[in-house]
View 1 (cartoon, one colour):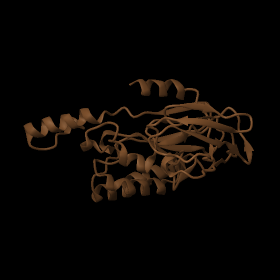
View 2 (spheres, rainbow, N blue to C red):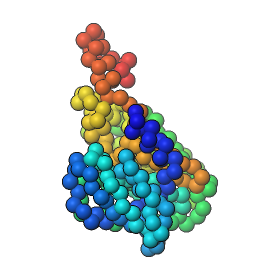
View 3 (cartoon, rainbow, N blue to C red):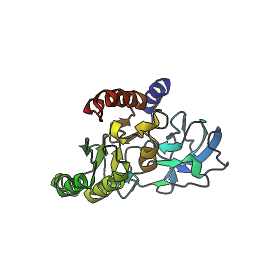
View 4 (cartoon, one colour):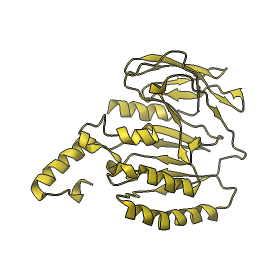
Length: 260
């Protein structure tokens, strides 16, 4: 709980993005000084905060920073500031880098062409696809409906999406299908972790989000648009859910919906 409280407190002042250049070799599980530079349109950005989920540092006037990463950290991630486009890969937000990749990481933000004081966002809550039949229904109904909604705002509207968890129903092979659906909608989408998105059978909260992270990066992060600061949190406890499953399966002989 302490890490979560600290993250919430610190994330309220996060705004920025980064361009990373690793000058040290990163060894996962050991504290390492990570350095980098934040730029936009070729110019350095000062006072941008960069985080590994445990520590936060601001960039200097020349856009550079040094961050001592925590031994448990997996990512260096950004809280994208207002006034800039959301980086994405086929519309799945990419606001982070894996520390384990090592090497050199250089990123430059792209300024928006218009002010973002007014913007719109769409929430996808509990798509919960659990088989290909569900995927087909999502593609045939949910995707066209959402595209129609996006189009109704007009071509000049700044709009992004947020998947707020349970993207799939325990079938993580369908994350790729979910991503394909988002790609068809055509707006940047951020993702939150739901209980059905976890590797809950591993039984430990520190490893239950392993697959989710492979697809979507950190489960605690934030971003900005206009005067709004969005904070994404992992509020699911894997151990509690797994114990619920074990007890209910023993009594009922099948997976209970009460643990959902």
